[in-house]
Amino acid sequence: MEFNATQVRDEIVAWIRDWFAENGPGCNAVLGVSGGKDSSVTAALCVRALGAERVVGVLMPNGEQQDIQVSRDLVKHLNIRSVEVNIRAAYEGMMGEVRAALGEVTPQTVQNLPPRLRMAAVYAVSQSVNGRVANTCNLSEDYVGYSTRYGDSVGDFSPLSRLTVQEVKAVGRALGLPDEFVEKPPIDGLCGKTDEDNLGFTYAVLDRYIRTGECADEAIRARIDRLHRINRFKLELMPVYPLPEALFSRY
Image 1 (tube, rainbow, N blue to C red):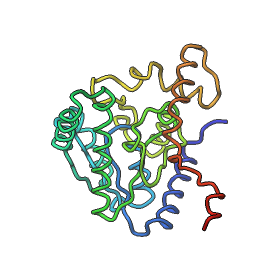
Image 2 (cartoon, rainbow, N blue to C red):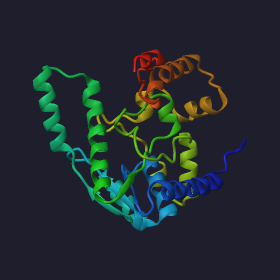
Image 3 (cartoon, rainbow, N blue to C red):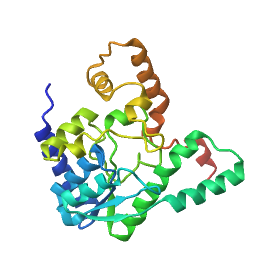
C-alpha cells in the first residue's frame, strides 16, 4: 500500500488536537529543536494542530554547536517562540563529578549524558510555560534502539513513533517544510559521524525491512535483528515485581 503523506499529516494533526483537548487544554507543546527532520516535522505538526503561539522550541547546544543556525532558522520559519539553554556547564559539572567518583567513564556515559540533560532542560522549560513535551523519535530509530533512554526517547506525546524515516520525510514535505529541514543528515553530535555511519546501514534499507521484511544483505539483516532484540526494553514500561495474591491473605 502506498504511503499517503497528506492523509497521515492530517490524521496526526487531528490526533494532537484531541490529545491536548483531553490532556492539556490551553497548554503549549514544548520540544527540543535540533533542526533535523524529526524535531522539524514534529514542530510543524504542532503548529498546524495548535497554532504557532502554542508551540515552544528549546535549543540546547553543548557549548559551541556548529549547526545551531539550522535550529534558529526553523523556529523563525515556523514563527514559534524559542528559548536557548546551553547545557555545557551542566554537562561538564556532572561529568566532572562522575569522573571524580569513578575515575573512568565509558563511551556510553559520555554519549548518553547530553541527551538526558537536554530532556531535563526541556521539561524544566515545559513546566515553566504551561507545557506538554513532544517526543520526536521515529519508528526506524526506535526499532534499532537508536535513542537514549530517559533522554530523547521520552515525552508526553509522540506524533512520529509509528513512522519510518522515509515516511517522516514525506510528511515533512506534505507540511511544506523546506528541504534544509527535511533532508538534513542526522549527526551524532560527538564525532561528526552520521547516524547511518554509526548504525552500519542506511535508513532506506532499514525502513524497507521494517515495512516489508525484505533485506538482500544477510549480514545487515542479522545486525538489524540483533539491535532490535537487545533494545526492545527501551520501548517497554519498566518491569515491576508482581506481588503474589497469596501474600494478601495475611491481611
